Image 1 (tube, rainbow, N blue to C red):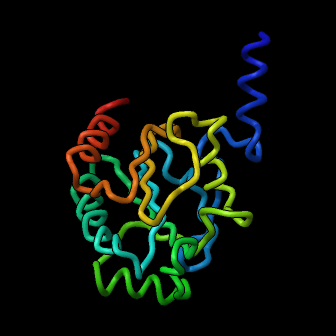
Image 2: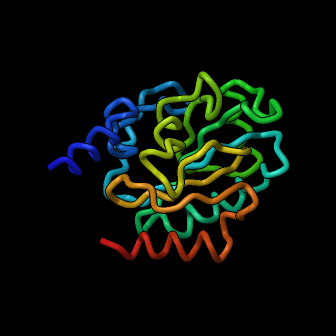
Length: 180
């Protein structure tokens, strides 16, 4: 009982959240969009930026989404201006850029902060090492990727240098999609 209480207390450290489904960020058009809408799907949550050396990864993220969306993968993009001021645009500008330059059709969300004192609640949850000892910790740069299982639990974290279509990401995505 004591161990269970301790685990429950630790989980409650970020707004009582127990999974990514407990968060409702705004879509890029400003509409509140519960991540619970993606229950039963495998998610790849990515902090993105339009003027980054890794911006080309939008292409790989889109390809991954197209390849696996019918099997239950959803890629979600969260624009952030935390690193090198590489996402200065408005939500409308970011959305237009992603569509025109990379043909992005996966869900994009409103610009948020993923680091610092104004870090968005979702990213407080994702980076909390007490809740996620293996995948938690501060995000070092744009295009950090979190793989989330069908139940809203974080399976893996991939840093910016790990390409969306790398063997590492694809094997993790395929394993997550195969799990029920």
